Image (cartoon, rainbow, N blue to C red; front, top):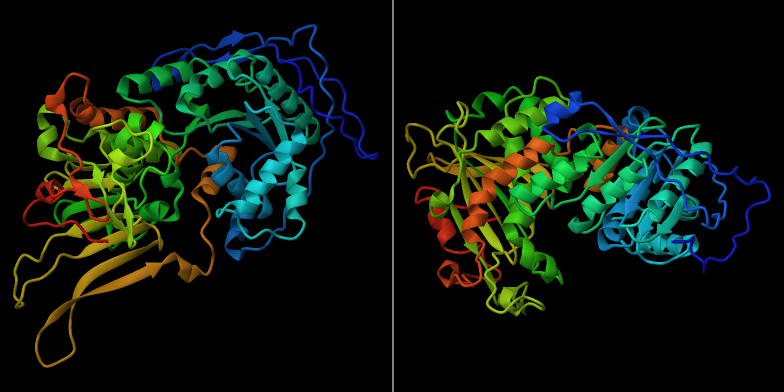
Length: 579
């Protein structure tokens, strides 16, 4: 494909010189052989020649590139240390699928916030890649409008939109063809002159999952995974696979081009401040770790409830369902962080090693156990915030009589010394009473009830969203002549710091630019998470011509906390937290 023919010639500032012709392409591209993560590290490197542009291809208009001014710095005093210690090297962020909803609502505002706070430095630029035919100027207009309209955008400082605009470039084409990747390579060549001789690049795949492998292969064919002229990393959005088999196949395909150390599988839940604080609270305070075990903990509840319905995503949700959309990734990561052992060090490998160990220790859930440890649901019509809403089967583009679950509650058991006998209850669903995500560690009752009226269990709760914070519920005597106990709560909220919390995408994008993989699930984590839910999916994926497997849906009303069977799952002596 030739360069955008309808793009008009752009005048360049007189003070900016034309860039030199593109340098010769890198002679080879490093890839890794197939196999496990451990074997890949020792596998011999394969090389492949970078393809040259077709001889009859029209030369691209040269776009001189100079470093832009850093955004307004010093707006947030709580980021002062981060500015000094977490500045990445000069780099280019390449976003595939840049015109999509995720990039518009989340990614562009997140990057703008980092740049405006001075965390990206001056030698940084963004190349958007999409399948829409538009010019650089049209893309710049699109990005600036996205920043103005998104609720995720930080307060915009005067003049910063104009400066940020200068960092934006655009390429379009068919992701199955080589020419679009060749032009991305030319963008890195141009950036090299402004970035001090390095061509560092972070490739962010904000695309449908069906494009992950074609884009990875295209980058590999053109030698763009080769790190001889600068580091190269690839960020892959969820869902990573549709099941265990497809996840393994995708990993194999990715590793034909990229080493595991270059792959960043993003789960935005891990970028949330309270999720990270879970480790800080537990391992940074001597009062919690000694009681974080089966001797004191009765059970753990992890809840991610959504008040919305499909919001126009029926095409995706009909194929995914709640298990693939939420349980296999978000909730499984929260579970692993809650249940893992203390890492030997606070670094990526040590933390991910411990998360993988606890996922491996989960008692398997074959099809024969699904009915006893898992509950599914689908919402019907009801009332939300005083307004009537339709049921799932009445949503636009949902198949008639669809058996896709919108709610799941599952009981996980961990076969290790710390957690033997302590159940972990994970639940998530749509059209529940409110949007809230919480991890609640529920402790055992005192062994001897010496006070009248009985006692409630102590609870240490981590609120991930909204109203991020941590609370501890315990019993205390009420003022008066009689010994009457009442529950009280010690509450810590992040707004006590007086600083606005960063978008989780800001944290994760900055980590990827820095090469810090701590908050990105590793290949073996993803694999074990799929193994845990595989039996549930096999049991619940209703096949055509098998009506006996079809559940009786809908089985909970919109605006309620899910099906009654979930209360039976948690047991008679426990109850779900009403959030």
